[in-house]
Length: 259
Image (tube, rainbow, N blue to C red):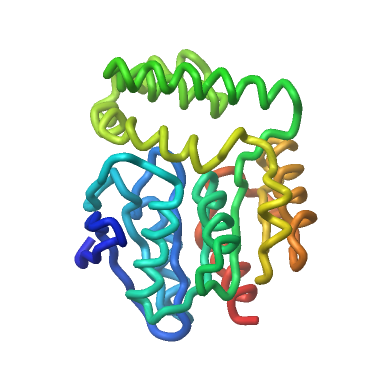
């Protein structure tokens, strides 16, 4: 990140921007930094001024205790301010939940697009999320960062052998460094259910997207978001999974943001 701004509570946030035109801010999900969404910024910057930033506690950004979801909304407000005072938002996975919360809070947002925000769509899934929250909180309180990462990877459905292989990977140390921020994404997701009351208060257009190669519940969650907001739309991308191809996703976002 080549620039820094201060959030309302004094936390330094690393961000960078490219392109010209109306502003778009990309919001990353769990276990990721702004670099994760940077490949999407490149094609979008041909039509928009696009910002990527490291959410607090990650990458080039600082952190200030105690954490609250409201502080992350203020972080987004600071980035939007640096981009001219108004922007469209794109959030992937739990970053989508943060983008939706920001829009509901009344930030100067023109559009919100979210990709596969992982809201639980069954009672069993809600119970699994509650158990995850309890175990994650304990692991982080006891300094067991590796166990925290394992808990998250299991929640995403990764096979146990893949998880143990990842633990032997040179990338594992970087994953452990991001482990404390898992609590932040967990807080952003609330109890894991679709926050219909919050979504019903959003007055700007919202596009909820999912890939047809992802589990069916991901598409159900995206449709639920679109149905809950007054100006919602739902889109399925053919051949895409939770890691969508930026060259496929960017034209869809560009069309939506240009409206």
